[in-house]
Image (cartoon, rainbow, N blue to C red; front, side):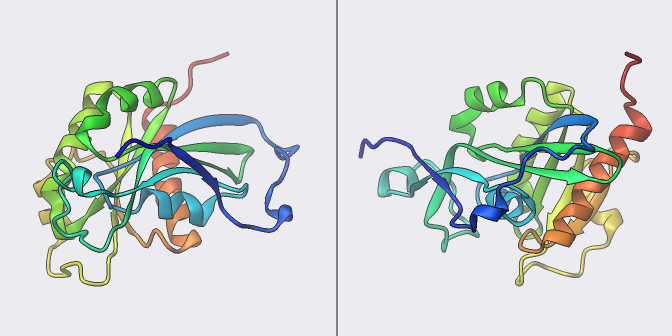
Amino acid sequence: MASATSSTVDDRPAGADVHLPDTARDLVKILVTGPFGVGKTTLIRSVSEIRPLHTEELLTEASAQVDDLAGVREKSTTTVAIDFGRISLPGGIVLYLFGTPGQERFRELWDDIAYGALGALVLVDARRIDASFDVLGLVEESGLPYAVAFNTFPDAPRHHTPEQLRAALDLEPTTPMVTCDAREADSSIDALLALVQHLIDHHPPEPR
């Protein structure tokens, strides 16, 4: 079925849209990425201080033949372009959050969205860790520093140790790995802060 991409904005009060804070000093582009159905749209919606932009389409029978719905059978929509939001952090840091589509068929679009980003938060679903391998490969190929956040779905397994999860993803010892609940703003902000601290500690900005 052919249809135009639908761009939607959350139905929030007008007060949710704010101007860039006067304290803004460092404006940083961050990717929020991960496999299909991992919670990227949810995370951006939960933390954004402006009305987040979503470009979603209903899943169709045709897309179901292409996209792997294992573990996310209840999902009815998918991002086909970007999600976008903004959040201001202490110290004058403002993050512009760009959520990427999670399917391999959007690879070319992913490369375009990644241009100019300083880092990536990779969301992972512990119920289907192997679904994250392709996205992690994309991030590593791009050379972007990244942090990994396991989104805590209610039925996700709890018996894995952090060491086992890190080994399953073949993460470098310095790569941050945290858990978060993408539905909760504070939890999602903590995951973003882990990425920002990683960028500060290991990838300091070049002198101006």
